[in-house]
Structures are given as structure tokens and as C-alpha cells.
Amino acid sequence: MRLARSAALCALLLLAAAAALRSARAASRIPVDATGETTRRVLRLATGAVETVPLEAYVAAVLPDEIGSFAPPAALEAQAVAARSYAVAQKGRHADQGADVCDSVHCQVFRGLGRATEATRRAAAATRGLVLVQGGHVVAAPFHAVCGGRTARPSAIWDDEETPELTPVEDDACLASPGARWTFFLPRAKVPLLAEKLGFPAARFLEVWAHADDGRVAALRLAAPGGRSRVVRAFDVRARASELWGWSSIRSTDFEVEERPAGYAFTGRGTGHGAGLCQAGAIARARRGESRDAILAHYYRGAAVATLGARGAAE
Picture 1 (cartoon, rainbow, N blue to C red):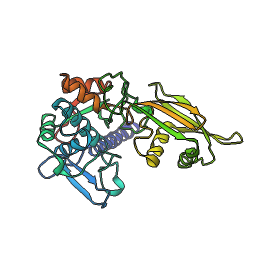
Picture 2: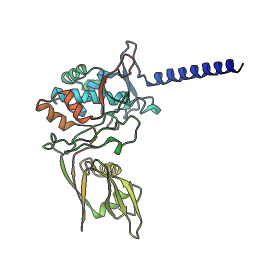
Picture 3: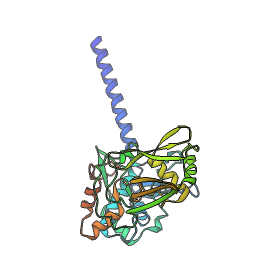
Picture 4: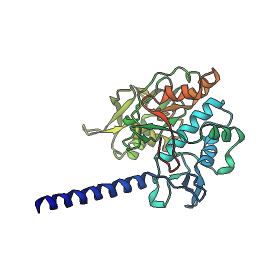
């Protein structure tokens, strides 16, 4: 009897495990339309409408507003692989609104299928189904405008499950690009404005507090009269400064700060978060003859290229 009970229990456990595996596989699949083509649900933030579009058409339409239609073919193709990977990995990022991704920089800029050009359609077709994977999973491949000479470690910026663990790399390709070097002066009188956005309006002083292992600033300390202080993430400082004074204020977290009598002088490198593909660098590398695969291998060290299967799983 005990043996029979044990056998029955094992059978039930196996059935439960099989059901769980089927459920996990179903959850990992990405939507397909009636023709079997993978689709994405895009939230249009201006209207709240959700537009379902074929994945490959979506990729072709994203490229013009991310890297530009006139980038060399190898750079367009590298961006296409990154954009496709991001769209696949971030399925359900806007699940509360019934969407996978939105149409803004929060996800990827999408201004409609009509934005695609012949060049971007060719890039999407040449890379059809190709994605970046790590540990058997498609990753949300990050990319940015200009790294300024070195890329960032993604995990130092985000803690999303889909964020890949990429090795930061030195990059000389973008150094001649606009935004590779920048300066910004924060008048002392405006420190409270920035501090208020960061939840500590009493602050009147700031300083670099910590660096990440990729060399970028990880945290700053805000200080108020009387000895009170608060440590805040550099990523949040950059985001709040952009809200107040535009994206060209504190362009990245790769900077130094010098305190002066009138305020704080920021001297920095790069534009954007700095992780993954450097778009300016990819364009420069393509122009000097590097292939799509070489570009991807440089910026996504730690990830590999794979092909999506018929139901959206990487093969």
C-alpha cells in the first residue's frame, strides 16, 4: 500500500511539474497573428489606444527615430537586432494598459508604421528573427546615443529581470561625435529645485558620493544646513535634471563635479544611460567597415545572437 501511495504521489508530482512547465512555456511565448507572425501591442501614450503591429514591421518603424534612417547598413542592422530583442524581452511591460511596450523613450520611440523607410525595412529583413540572448533568454538589449568612450554596466542602472549582464567596454569610435563631451553649470540658487525633485528640498549642497565599477557616478550626496543629508542615485539626479532643464543638462552619469562659489560645474562624457550599443559608435564603426556581427559582439559582450522560433522562443 505504501508503495502504491508513493507511486501515486510521484505521478501527481510529475503531472504538476509538467503542467507548470507547459504554463511557463505558454507564458514565455509572444503573441502571433492569424498568419503566424509575431506581433507587438504598442501603447500610444497620447491617446491611450493600443495598436497591435507585426514585430518585423515594428522594428523597421522604430529604427528611424532611434538611430536614424541614414545610418550605414551594418549599424541599422545592429540596431534592428537590439530593438527586436528589447521588444521581445519586454512583453507586458505595460500589461496594466493591455500593451507590451509604449511608443516613447520609456520603451522605444514608435511613431507609426509609416515611419519605416526602404533602408530600415532592408535592415529588419536582413536580421529577421535575430535577437540577443543570455542564459537561454531573450534580453532587453539596451542602447543609447553616445557612450563618450566607455559603456556602462546595465545592472548598475536597472534591476529588471530582462536586463542583461554585459561587460563594459572601452569605445573610441564615438569620441568625435556631438555629445561625447559636455559641460553643465548648476547655479547654487537652483540646487533646491533639483533637490525638491529628489525628495529633499532642504538641500543646498551636493557632492559625488560613490562610483560604480564601470567608472560612472553611482550616487551623490545632498546636504542641508544643520548636517542633514541624503544619498541619491546618480541615474535619478540625471533624470530629474532632464525634467527641469532638458536632456542636454546632465547628459549622462559619467561626470565629475567641481564646486565653485556660484554653483557646481559638471564635466561629463557621453549622452544617455551608456549601456549596450552606442549608436554614434555603431555608425562610426560601420563607416570604417565593421560588420553588424562585429558591432554587436563589441557592445553586447556577455550576450549571443540567436533566432526566434515560430512561437517566439529563442533557438
